[in-house]
Length: 359
Image 1 (tube, rainbow, N blue to C red):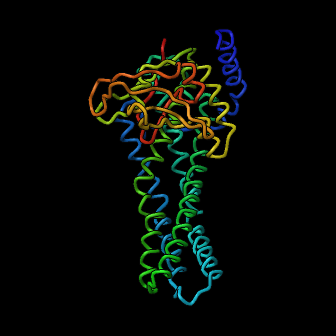
Image 2: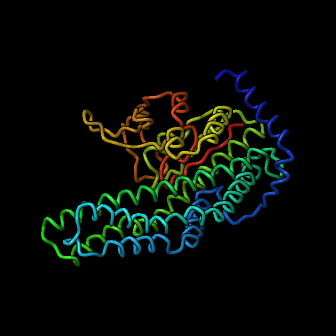
Image 3: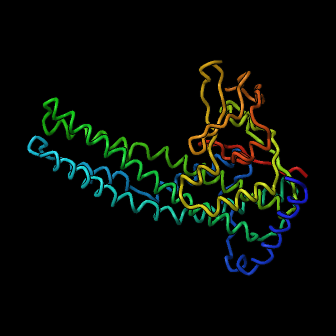
């Protein structure tokens, strides 16, 4: 993007912020220090706190869903017809779905509180540690960021539990068919169905909320940082990975890359208009790793709409080490990286990478 276009976008951002002053004041978003996302240790603690809040809010809904499904499916399958078996599985999914349907609404309050805390913490850190000239109160884009991440995270959770139900439905039909073919009795089939229901609906839940919390906080922090950079007149920022034993190849490769604030604002504008989880994933894809069949080396890539875009090849891995990014052969320019949607974190589940203003 040329400098004139970047200037125009920054001016547009400032003009919109001024025009939305009344809206910003009306929001009266509280500033708290419950979540500190400015440091790696603070980020880890914030993720743990939010995950605990989400688990408390959800309660036993996923366990209740599993039990409701199993209760419907505890029948003498040998006396049923194929049509009855299809209907029973459908009824089990409906019963479980009534329990999982309450989960997105239950997490709205903790996510809403956390969104305000993440934005407030991000602004505070930008003022204190990066020396950016920012107003004490949220700007208009900050308010939009908070609303956006709450809405989209709720959609992602709803989509996830829908997939879990679909997966269990397919597994239940398979288990019943194979159990009957093998001559298994009611109790044996019921036991296999209970294991499948537990695995699909409840056993994945504890770790799942850590992933949700990490993605929510990471994305909220990135969006709020971009908003702060624009407000302070910063034009470019740098990706800053936490270089320790847990750092992924993805974050090591992106460490030190620089991107345009104006481009990032434009990306947020596009993402903000989306509601379907799949559309959001296409706009902000996670970076994946796989081995190249020909070279045996690890390839970093994104997949958008079934189209793979290679970003880099790992020449020397530094995985498991501290303060070493390793060596890579870039397969995409910084501009191409931005165009693929990897201009700011999170880049994967439990990503801790952040950004730093270039002043």
